[in-house]
Image (tube, rainbow, N blue to C red; front, side, top):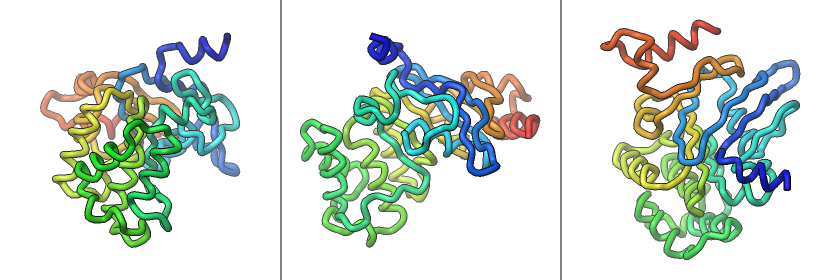
Length: 245
């Protein structure tokens, strides 16, 4: 019953007092935050703030020394969590010896994707990957490999999407198509990015972290209240980060 209650909590993502160390370095220091179902949140912070580490804990790729993360109430290593999650790491490495189509069909199958062939063909059109569908991943350009990584994160229509710098290496037309497609999805988002314009287009709320701890949480529009009306929001965010560095 306790597990069922956790799964029905109404939160898409819960990060509860997680601590993650690498040797003597404490990358994440008791970090806590949550993302409600349907909410779209940007995770901002300077290099080394713990953003990528936090996303890897949420995705179940790293185990914290203290605390826990949950997806829809489930622990990241539970099957229910894996089925609901679409995860894009910053430097994604799809299966290099498989073709583009084989990658998508394999991941789509283990995620239980309905109408898998139609979904794969849709992603080929969206990301202009159809001409490369028989190409081995290790022969793709960096930009096309990023397109494939995005497709792998989206193939099963996940209800929770966690992305680390999602538009890296993409040309401008592809960026626009990806943004439009993501905005049409009925999913909860947690997006880590250094580019404020991407955060503003993909999300409504911001979590700023520095040194593995939360600095500020709130709506993007509320950020502007911390500076002059004509001041770029990037300067406001940078000032908030420096104040705790």
